[in-house]
Length: 428
Ligand code: ATP
Ligand code: MG
Image 1: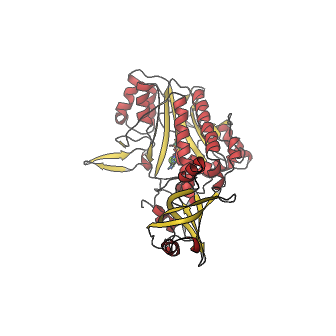
Image 2: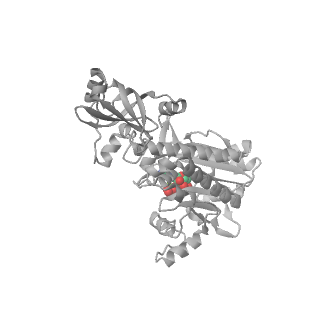
Image 3: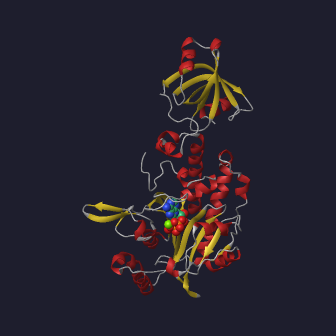
């Protein structure tokens, strides 16, 4: 609700002064309805020609949507209104008379993306930003409850983490540098200072194709903890996800409903989450008539098929070593697979978390780097972490916009971020 209305209701004041933007107008030559919007909500304001000054009436007649205004009026209870109130206008002052708003009904997705700086005021997107803020708050809350320290890793880096093909290169004073794909290596360094750390930063990936779940710039929440083993990692992530989902279902019930998501459905997302191995995933797919050769990564279609069997996030562990990053620890019970885990969201929203226990032994780590065709020289500082007090440790990365997309039921991840960056788009 508009803060001024909340205030008036609390103090029993009948007259309020509101500031905001014109969301809609309609009416006749004696009566105008102006729906006013601010960051909190919308409220209908009624202007009656007979009851206002000629100046106010003239303003009401010429006003266009998205004009900024100050309106003074009497608050009247209206059970059907979104805020429960409407305003009988006494005074209307136009702060800036807007030009004709370029966005009207039924415009193409591309046009709306070109107009993103204006379209982000829409009710749907405004609601998404609120849910996203609640998700970020809940994430930070969970880390704080578990005594993790928030840290600030670099964005410009000299080393890659997730593989060269999606790396953004940068001219760094004549030398090559990269935009960070993941803060993981830096978080691994920081656990030796703080034990348990997390960071929420932008990550950059030069994703070559346009999909509903890839951005080239996204907000990445990563956690890393010394002494944490694989089982503890799985339990921690399960706890984090359910805390976020439960909190958002409680604190954003109205917003979620507006987006077409029933909060009651989210309340069912409680631990334990189902856990299967990669091998078991292949068996399930095989029964469904989909043959994935052992050693191939699961593609989007396969993940979607798998998720038809589950209505909670699914924990998939122990993928083949050869398709996973060098820093993941081998499974002591099966050297062909690693102690890694992807968490897949229900309803086909795809992977939301990637994680693993990390290899802590320097010799094995060097062998893994070499086996992936890379030069251990490039990882000198990282290998130091295995030279000076190495300990077992684990960590994960969660894509904030992936979670936003899932909880807000968005068709595409582009609507989970105010200014989406994709292969075809870097403006506005
Ligand atoms: P995918 O298979 O979907 O490309 P990934 O295996 O490349 O994901 P990780 O490297 O494990 O992902 O990154 C950790 C998390 O970051 C992912 O689980 C996902 O939530 C998020 N993420 C990764 N790439 C993107 C992207 N391009 N846009 C938005 N979020 C992403
Ligand atoms: Mg990827």
